[in-house]
Image (cartoon, rainbow, N blue to C red):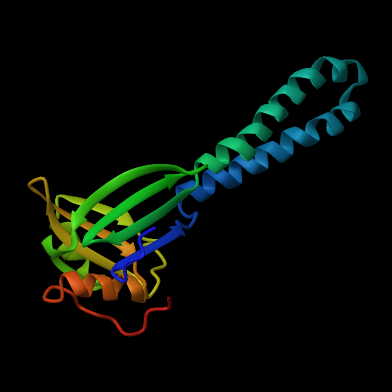
Length: 185
């Protein structure tokens, strides 16, 4: 970590919503159902119970493993830093495996502004959009976006901003920054 006053970092988790949330709910429901299967089978027939118990327990074990270990791998977190004028966005999957999404100079950004619904057309005009917000279906008041040129491609990044990040970005690119006064952090 840098000791500079022109350093900021933030780490947050993406909300579980949409198809991702449905897959988690269905997986947990199936895990519970298969777990109850050995209890329900004796009522059907005691002789068949012994034959079906082993496959049911194997399936239950596999689903439990999936829910506990693989389910954690499906969680998505974002971490970004602004240090010495460079904005770096990382995606953190599951157990802390970092993948750098982008690294760009703050001064090369053509706009840094709070995201509102009327800005959607601006983002649609970009060739590549990194949606690193907590949730686009239930936006928080802290969502900012920036537009820049990355390797010849017009790119946008939507992220959760803090007061510190906005002040550091202002230091490096005050001309293209629009400040929102009511940030939560």
